Length: 319
Image (cartoon, rainbow, N blue to C red):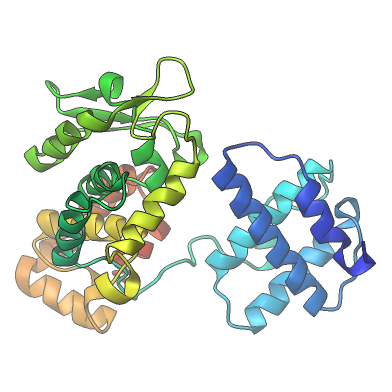
């Protein structure tokens, strides 16, 4: 093993927790950290020797390349995971130490998949006899679209136990970001219809008492199968305006319009144009409606009310 590759070797050997897809993302982003570190001229050979100085150099290099704060934070999170795996606890937990700001992930460019393309893809998927898992994948993707769930959350819903059709609630507790469960209230008829259709595909998982949309004994490999089905049937940025994650963007776009009566900021050419359009429709109430919609979307997304960095990422900033 060449010395220049020793940090990557450490990434491969590190013992990580969590499911395979999470571990894959951590290792992938940690390797990117190593790549930038080498480009910046730093030659640490062991993760036990990595310090705040190395993180700062990577931050400076990425910022100079025009990379956003959100992406840098993602890479730093992975690098910290690897450092901790080797009992290196000297790295600052705050990205602010390195000049990286929380909440700077705002993306004014809409990434929502087009509703008509989503429906077209779902129809094609349900009618696809060449791929044995197409129907199951369509069911999960419909749930992602109707409820704004992440891919892993939708796959791991324990429908028999966590969906209460009488009270119109759904407990989302498996596959969540950070392991934080949440309950969705006041489910619509469309949302409940999607959950009802999913009952056909519920399978017992490898965990006792859990029944979800993942084929029996397949595990997290199912998540990649869903990705494949989506791409095969046109759910791509090129063909549909958004990827699987674009379903979540479109759901929150719809929630915003339903609550406020006007389009979110990222559907306008500038914040000023957005504010003028919102004021024309809702008058002085536009700001209150905007805040209410954002609070609701942030909670639905699995975060706390007031996380405007989260709603900004889906809707654009209102100010």
